[in-house]
Image 1: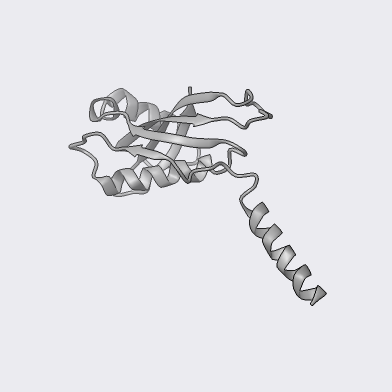
Image 2: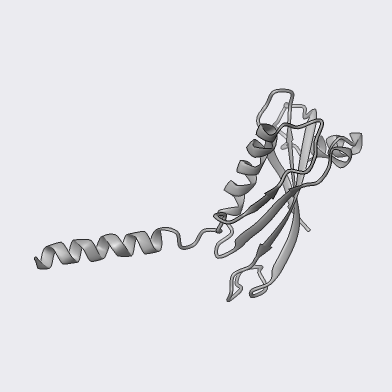
Amino acid sequence: MKKTITVAFCFVMLLLFAGCGKGDISNVKIEYGTSSVYSKEDMDAAIEVIKEQFSSFEGCELHSLSYVSDEECNKAENIEWMNDLRADDSKEIFTQCIAFNSSFRSPKKGGDTWNADEEYTWTWWLARSEDGEWKLMTWGY
């Protein structure tokens, strides 16, 4: 009986601590806006890349992601900027970019580069080649 209780206790503790240390993406509100360029599936693929990166923001909570606009994403200078951000060893030429504004809260006690319990607004830029996968190029203020 004691062994069963110990195993059950360990299992409960494992479940409690499994989510610790990760950014919380469970309640993010998505605003797709209107796009004649990108489908919901295109946007969802980009959003998944953002969520994956955000998950590494220990103790932060993502509140919202909203599509910037077709006008902003399709500017030639922004696509050129994405290509300028490519890794030196990358031969891929980006033909599309997409951006989302975000709102999130930093950890209650702060830490690392975060101010304690503060709301941040960042823009996330992603790029892809024709029919390629989205790559997160830059994010922040």
